[in-house]
Structure formats: C-alpha cells, structure tokens
Length: 363
Ligand code: 13P
Ligand code: SF4
Image 1 (tube, rainbow, N blue to C red):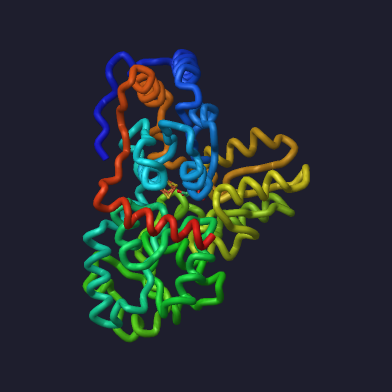
Image 2 (image 1 turned 30 degrees about the vertical axis):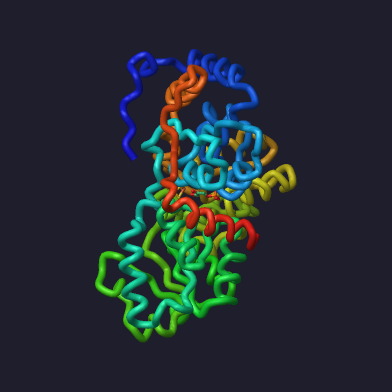
C-alpha cells in the first residue's frame, strides 16, 4: 500500500512531544475512539492501546465493540481490513501507516490463487476441496474463500478449522503460510510426505505431480513469514546447551523441524499466557518477534526470557507504525478528518465476512 510522506510538521517530532500529543488527542476523542494494538508493536505504541492481542482476539474485539465510532489499528494492513469487515459501516478503521503490510500476506495474490484453483480442479475437481486462508491475507482472498465455502483461520484456531475442513471435504487448500498449515496438519497426525503437497505459484501445476495431488489431503501454498523462518533447530540446541532446564516456545509460523524441536508452540497470545503462568525462576527461549519477547523480559524480571535468535528479528512492517504516524492519524481525527481509512470494497466485503464469520463460528 502506498503511504504519502508525513506532513513536514510531524516529521521531526521527538518522543516526548509525540507522547504528549497522542495522550491529548486520545483524551479529546474519549470513548468514540478505540486503539487496538498487536503484540508485535513497539512499546512507544502499545502503551496507547485500549486492547492488546493476537489476530484472533483483536478481530473478536472489533466485532464485539458496538460503541466506538473509530478504531485506530496499530498492527498491519490485513488486520485493519479484518476489523473493517467485522465492524459496522458507520464505524471507521484507520491504519496509521498504510505501508505497514505483511510480507507473508503478500505472497499469495488473488490472481495466483484463482489460477491454482482452476489447475487443481483439472486434476481432482474442486467439489471436495475446502479453501482455508490464514488471516494473514488480503481481503480479496478472504472473499475467495468465503465464496467457495471455506473459512479463515488464525494461529490460535488453525487446528479446529482444519479439522472442520477435513470432516466436510476430502482435501483442504491452505494459504498463504505453508508452515502454519504443515504444523497444524502434522499435529493432527497427517504425514508431510504422503498427505501434503506444496503448491509453488511460480511453477506449472504448482510443481505438483497429478498422482501426489490425488493422494494429498492438504495442498499447502508456498508462502512463509520472513521473521519466523529465521528460527532454527541449531538455535534451540544451543539454548538447551547454554541454559539447562530452558523451555522453548515458538510460533507456528516457524518451520516443522523447529516446532517439533520446541517444547510448546502457539499464537502470540498463547506464548504470553504460558510464560506469564510459569513459575518464578523459570527460563524461556522464545521463537517469535522481538518486541513481544522484550516486553515479556521487562514484565517478568523474576524469569529469564530471551529470543532464540541472537540477531534480533523485528517485523519491519509492524515497525512502520511509528509514534509520529499515530500523532498524525489521531490529530486528524480530532479535527474531524480521516486519514488512512481502510475500506474493504463493498463487492467483496460480504464474502470476506462470510469466511471470517465461519471461523468465529467454528471456534
Ligand atoms: P498471532 O495471530 O499469533 O498474533 O500472529 C500474527 C502474526 O502475524 C504472526 O506473525
Ligand atoms: Fe507478517 Fe511475519 Fe510480520 Fe507477522 S511477523 S505480520 S506474518 S511479516
């Protein structure tokens, strides 16, 4: 998404002045405004969030919030789109910086998925294939899935959604994150070699042999998160050698070997819950974004919490929500102007809502 440069009067705001102006604008807007913050946001942003959460929690909060007139979403573009899909038309969703996207979501475009669907259909038909999209995807893909009887999922509910799909269809077509799909299917007892195929959108027929396609239960899209693919089994082995008794917890966007080598895996909300509930004195190595890990470190000084990757790995797109952008978005709202409103086009909204609603119903 294109983001025009900030007006010059915002470009050089220092941290104190930004904080003061955010506080003032938030106070002026009062209950008309709700600020939603994803766990990967930096401290200078997350401190202003009325609600913090993972993708699922934030979608549910937006859907349940009936009073607010406007949501400022401190997260990435697909999250703001989900909020717009689930809220009423008279409730507006603003993303402070339009260039805060998600490189994983960008790995599956509608035209590619439609082409894949058609090619798969030539081999096995699509009558008994249920499409599932991870919420980390554009609204157009959510609409595609809604239209074809499928569901969204998040890292929290991927298993329930996949179980639902495979109890109603012979196969599931899972995009765009191969790792969440593979980890979830593996945890259900499916075999990565026999039951899963990997669809590469750059290759003819996705690079999948017809026989393998006929046999597969899950067709995985060749997408990945660049933050989570940095975690390795070697890092886990090193953490165990250097910190006897350490527990390793990772996000399911990590690869299968990493998830299998870890003690626990789950969404950002799950990771936080597990570490907060652990006994004082315990040690945790965490495979997810660094802002979340650092916050847990600060919040729980009686526990040792560190990132598996010694070279810190922030999500560069989440990081684009800088306090200056938040000041700019909020002060415009105070003035009765709306900058950076995220509006999902009406011709795809109903189908996209269907896939999100199906997910909320399943879970
Ligand atoms: P969660 O739903 O676990 O917050 O994950 C979202 C995400 O983008 C992880 O990279
Ligand atoms: Fe997307 Fe990965 Fe960033 Fe999550 S961490 S928002 S999946 S790029």
